[in-house]
Length: 69
Image 1 (spheres, one colour):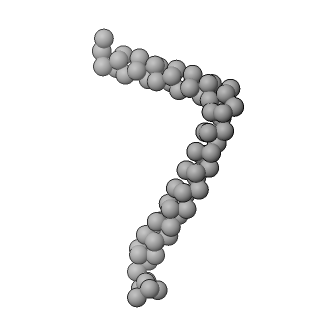
Image 2 (cartoon, helix red, strand yellow):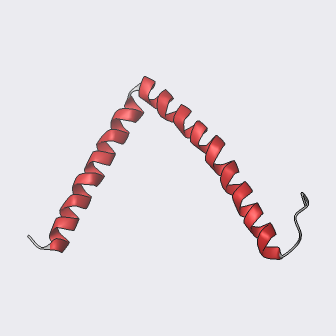
Image 3 (cartoon, one colour):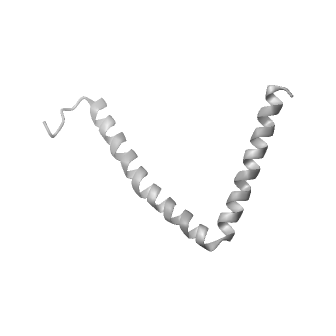
């Protein structure tokens, strides 16, 4: 088996596992609630942190002095 064929086979196996896991999560109400809760937690924490970091980097790149001097 060549490296390219092995990579394709691995991608097919991973995609199949992902589809199967998504099906189980979407058809099981308790898992669906858990996934929704985790998604809300992730979006509630990571998106604001990303925006604060980007704003801080943009401020530093603009060359203006910090307000907290």
